[in-house]
Image (tube, rainbow, N blue to C red):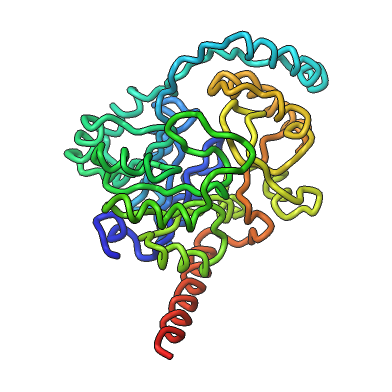
Length: 357
């Protein structure tokens, strides 16, 4: 399944770009150095902050890497729902002795400024979340020598990705940790989205561009299963979240395998968009009432999440995690790439031997 994308890295392993300070240059460099494709997350950063991380990453590795951008979001009309949610969160603000954030702190995440930096200082790969860039944007990046990927959560979204001219599509199953990358926020949070293997099959029958599979993948055998279903590579987030190089809060890393956090749910509680996290107090108490308002709710809860982390209270943090979180391994990122690659090779060999009988 060789392609311009997969030819960039030795193993079919892509480290997911996890925003919020998780996907730091040290993590991306370790993954790329080991033969995978490391990624920086530009979401919630300024254009200059993104540029500084790119420079730092380039000082750590000469291997290919990627940068992820969030697409600008449409205007949210029901401001009253956000105000109601703010009133509900007033007790949280008092408890953590902080103020709620300004829900009107911006909708475009500095998209145009970040694109300008990436066109002036091209990187090997750029991916997009929460929508499809225009053909002009994708063509401009291609002329700069950059390969482009766009997340899709349905076959219809994958068709839009191909139609816009992206080089590959990230098929994100409902098992994935963090934010679902649906192009429009019409998703339910009851977990009724499409599972990864079914999604890969549907996308494979719909588009001809390469597929990167994402969603709950924690072992090399799952990478092999995704590739057998039609993917060219697999993107792993939660698996790398637990590594020493990850910038995740120590409480977040510990929670992945803590029996206290037995399961995950999709919730709007922290950001206003469906995102999968470990079920904690905040998610239980506020998830059912959070409006479909991204990024307003993200801005609103940002000080609460920061204060909870500072207080060492994981019950008030956004503990993003995929469904396979209990399988997390505390290994250096480079070693994890090697282990995953060995597991995938063993699974591939077992499959081929089974088919030869």
